[in-house]
Image 1 (cartoon, helix red, strand yellow):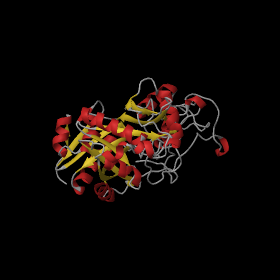
Image 2 (cartoon, helix red, strand yellow; image 1 turned 180 degrees about the vertical axis):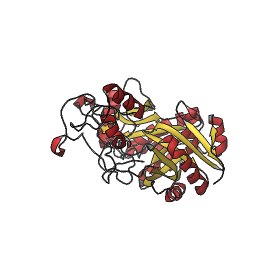
Image 3 (cartoon, rainbow, N blue to C red; image 1 turned 120 degrees about the horizontal axis):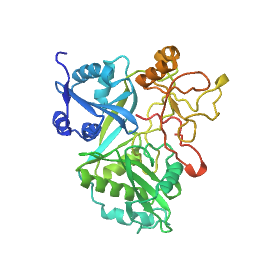
Image 4 (cartoon, rainbow, N blue to C red; image 1 turned 90 degrees about the vertical axis):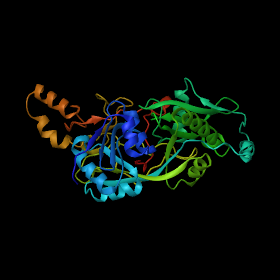
Amino acid sequence: MRGRPVALRAAAEVAAACGDDALVVWGAQGMRAGVRAWALGEAVAVACPDLNRRDRLTVRGEPAQVAALVRELLGEVGPSYRLLGERALVEQVTARLPAARVPASFEWMDTRRVAPAGPHRAGAAAHAGGGADPAGEAGWLHGADEEVTALLAEASPSAWAVPGVAGVRRWAGVRAAGGALVAVAADAWSCPGAGFVAGVATAPALRGRGYGERVCRFALEELAARYGRVALMVDTDNDRALALYERLGLRARPVAAAALDGGWGGWGGWPRTPSPGGCGPAAPDRAPPGGAAEPVTGAARGPGGKPDARPGPGRQSGRNDVQFHPWSGAFAGLLQRGGAAGRGRRAAQCGVDRRRVGGAGVRHRTLHRPRLGAARGAVHRPAPGHAGP
């Protein structure tokens, strides 16, 4: 395709180029520091680092033009970025990019106006299992990170939005009559033009009593009023969540994510860190969406392939998960040659950490992970099978 990508410098330029598409506007994050955007013909691509715990390349446009644009950008954005867009578009684009692969399909849901509660819902909590406090109101929580963390550890251990994660700004919650926190939802990765809800969870013993819907309604209404639009993501097969969010006025749109490097580990590629599992909120009573499982590694491996439990730099709680940079293998020999000053300089240039894993001398990056279940001293680890988009 002729022509070169044109850089888009401002959020208004991105919105105009994509027709104010909610997903692309969200992917641009108000063009905050580090975000880049381009247009090529009718195709638009926005590269945003660390958005919903991934580096994301959100796209829109005609498949052939988008594929041409992505090819132009691959060398610039690097292999850590994941393609994100409407499902049919992502599938057609990846068919044109041999190294790309679709790991997850799910639903993007958004609205500009949350539907009012119907009369039939008013007394639902009082009768759907008894024991719920129908007067418990949802609101923004203050100084409750430990309570939120404990609830997520019990109700949604693979949630992507947890206290302390970059982009997770605040939490809404509902308390039962005794004061216990029983349902939460996060204002996470919201930006000008698109509020975003994630980390929805309800205490397992109190599901079906209206707490989840109450906290969702509150968070959605608050963010829609502030940003003019609000969105979330959910598993395609999560019928209960879809029904709830549709009742709240959101409309589903099938989307997908795709890895641009084609590597999953295990086929001559590089090991991956455990994925935080799922993207955005699921139903109040369900873990976040997963998608096709991605091979993962647990703790670093020591001699004999056994988990390396030895203490060392970066292996304290919350920092003991390692992610191997896709270039680390290519540069391993280079980093092992030359003097200490040269190795340090090249390591800095390559963006890798010179610590050792299991005595193997492999350079790697660490993925800074939040602690979940901190009261038990445990580092949050997602449920198996939740590769997430």
